[in-house]
Length: 465
Image (tube, rainbow, N blue to C red; front, side, top):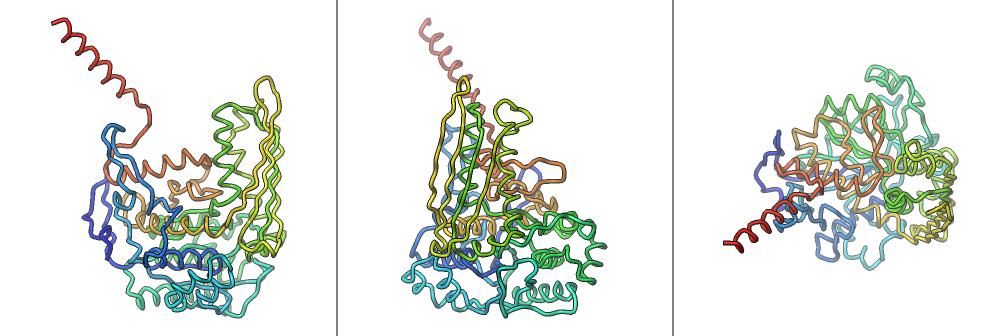
């Protein structure tokens, strides 16, 4: 067991955080490129083959107290997170390939690396998946659950959850969605209450997507659920209700990886400097399964809604109409099989500055989607488990403090999401400080100068004596 798991329960300002004792089971709907890259990466780190680059929980430091205190422990040494050696994995997929075969087909990781973790990956075989071709039109596969209605499918997933927990000896579980983007769905009556949702399950209501079946099963079993796709999934009233009642934290939506990561870095900079924006044209080419799925207009609509919301929320055109009220924001995604998982994102950004003079920024980001997503999955798994063990967090439902990881962060109804990456980072770290009873950091810093002036005054007094 990891040294992190042996830490004693520690006080927050108000509540307790339980220690991370025993195994943490990670259940993953969708064993494609992201899931296999994540699991293979964890095993590679455990074997000392590579480093967890990109993971805040593993490589990040957190400042405590004043800058002059010199206290900046690693995040994993500060909060009682599960250790990597305590993670065990299971998943569902519509294809029957084990994780080693699936990782090879995904083509993200080098064969030489996969061979070093082959025994472990080969041991993880997919359970039959909840799948409906109507929600992901570009995919189909044989490894699919059958039931007379969606209620039966929920019960089958619940049985999978209980079976995995017992068979692997896990003390706690987390479920994280790594499957494909589903077709666009709007909230409807079936999503408003447990009673309406239960009725919808029995009559196979088309408003209940497969991802919702996994999430509903997780909530019924008290298992935290993180949504890595832009699907509606847990961003509906019934899931928020169940999350609070069952003390099973939820978060989402849509991992913040390539192009949107760049937007949430640059747009806050434009706003901070009061530089205007007249247009932002984004186009992507990618050839993995995600690209194939997004070639369907319905699935693309779900992704487009997630991507388009970012700039408006960051730039606040209602407050700065002269700078941001007439932005032409376009997003395109093109399926191009030769590119595989190595996505290329082009951005043309038209800005204007002093006296309205125009300028341009052009970015060509040759990124690897799954390489950027894998450390996000790891951090979310560990932080959602932490939330479940925290009296301050487990009953509140949506974990907005994890917005740092998402393109379209979930919030309480009526509350605008925070998209600014740097504010999100402050929020995340202040939440950790709060949980562990440390003072939150505002970056005001005036007290440094008060003490300096006091010290300088004393030195002048001594000089006169």
